[in-house]
Amino acid sequence: MLLSPYTVKRICTPILSRRTAARFGSLAREGLILQSASSNVYENLAVEDWIHDHMDLEQKNVLFLWRNSPTVVIGRHQNPWTECNLHLMRDKGISLARRRSGGGTVFHDLGNINLTFFTSKKKYDRMENLHLVIRALKSLQPDLDVQATQRYDLLLDGKYKVSGTASKLGRTVAYHHCTLLCSADSSLLPVVLRSPYDGIHSNATPSVPSLVKNLSHAYPSLTCEAVMDAVAKEYRFLYNDKPNIHVVHPSDEAFFPGITQKIKELCTWDWIYGKTPKFDIQKTFQIFHKGIVVDGHLSISIKNGCIESCSLVLPSHWLSEQSCSELQDSLVGSKFCPREIIFLVTTLLRSCPDEEDVHTKWNMLCETLVSIM
Image (tube, rainbow, N blue to C red):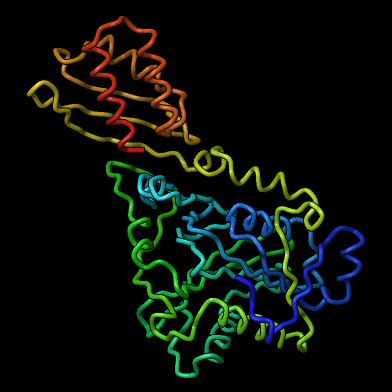
């Protein structure tokens, strides 16, 4: 994922310890270009947080270039259960991450470039950044028809979205980040960003579906490496060709003191799932058992990613009200995730009377619950 050496000079140097900050002082007051050597989404998102929190952006602008292994990244105020296919992602080993900025859900892989523009809040200008990206693309393909929209997306041929955008505004500093679809897995992208879950009622920020297309599918010369080179070159032009690209290793404390804790926070269940705005699930379901179809209804309220209340309605001749009550009461307070529900039901089965029929029915209900998570 390194940029080609004929375009820019790389200096792989630790940054931003007190000693190193002084070394970059005069350069940073104008412009600084950083490129991540990592494809770990949590590490790269942590770099964004670190720069936002620790760098003096009043006197310098920073461009951060990064790519990730397959990941779905949701916005700060989004609900992963309504935004993506969590079952498919678990099966294929695709990560889920929640970023600090708002905006919609995006799919990342090594064919998708991420660009983060850091400035002071008063210099923040998303449209100016997008125009820089457009100039970079046109330097590679002059007849390319790509335009910025009022939603701060980039459209190819007036139809296909090739870049999504989001931002975070602090008290005095800000950043704007956008994606660029160069050669992402176009067969995987649409299916992982399609939620299969129904019956969910949520006030979380929804994504706006769009037609997408890879730049390289339209123009094979627009590879990730070529595009990153062009963007870096265009950014350098703003500062009289002064900023070189500095390759950084996000997990190294010598580069970013204290970043390990930021990475850990972004990996936690409490952040990825627990920050989901409160939502409810109303679901009717059927269970086929011993030649008969049993109709059931499930009502769950979820707050901070945990089950706040649960109501399970089943025919009393199939499962007693006492058994239903015991099961639903045990679910309250647990995390809304398959692993925890399976563990909880397994533990509950060990403590209940050794009745094979009851165990079978509870296991079937457990499978129903897991199917909506």
